[in-house]
Length: 269
Image 1 (spheres, rainbow, N blue to C red):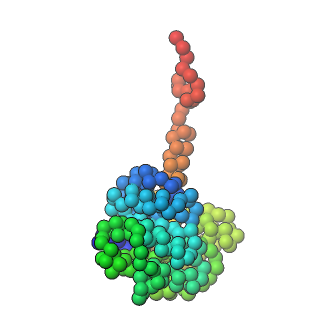
Image 2: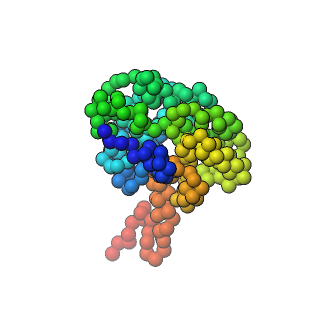
Image 3: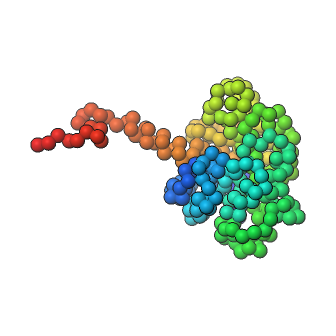
C-alpha cells in the first residue's frame, strides 16, 4: 500500500505545500499534478464538481506522487465516506466551529473499532495501490483529517476544537475568517486583528500537537508563513493561476509597433 507521504511529512514536522482545484477537469488536474506539489485538494464546497468528476480527477492526479485530497461540501458522515471511497487520501472539513463536528470528522474517517466508517466498494484501494484487506487494515493510519478554521467563533474556542484526539491538522481560510469578524475579506489580510488570530491559532496547534495550516495567495506570503512555522501550506488554485497568467499576458502585449488586436485583420496588399 502506498504510504501517505503528506501525513508522513507532517508527522515528522516537515512542511507540505500544495494547491487547490476548483475546475471540474481531470485534464487540468493532471497538468497541475505534474508540476511537483505535495498535494492537490479538490474543492467540492465551492467548486462545481460532482463525485464522479472528483474520482476522475483523483485518477489523473494519481499518475504522479501527489496526494489527492478533497474539501467536503458539508460536515457529515456521508460526505466524508464518499470522498474517501472515491480515493481521497484525506479531507478538509469547512467552517468547523464545534467540538462535536471535529469528533464526527475523526470518527467518520476511521474504520471500526476506532471509528464508524463503513466498509464498502469504490476506488480507494486503487488510489493507494492496495488490495482491499490491506487498505481496510491500514487506512486509519493513512487518511489525513483536516479541520478548516474560518470563523471567529472557532478561534474563540480553538483549544476545545484542536484537543480532539485523532485530528491531524487545521487549515485557516483568511477570507471567511475576516468576514466573520467584520474585517474586509482578503486572501492575505494586513489587519492586526487578523494577525492576532493567526498567532492564536498557531500557538494552539502547537500546544495540542495539531499541524497548523494556512491558505496563501502568493509564493511570497507562503514563504513568510512557512518561516513562522506553518506546516500545511496551500497556495491559490488552478483557476487563479490560469486567470492571473492570462491577465498578465494580455496586459503585457504592446499594441503599438505594428501589433494589432486579434479582431483587427491585417492590411491587404
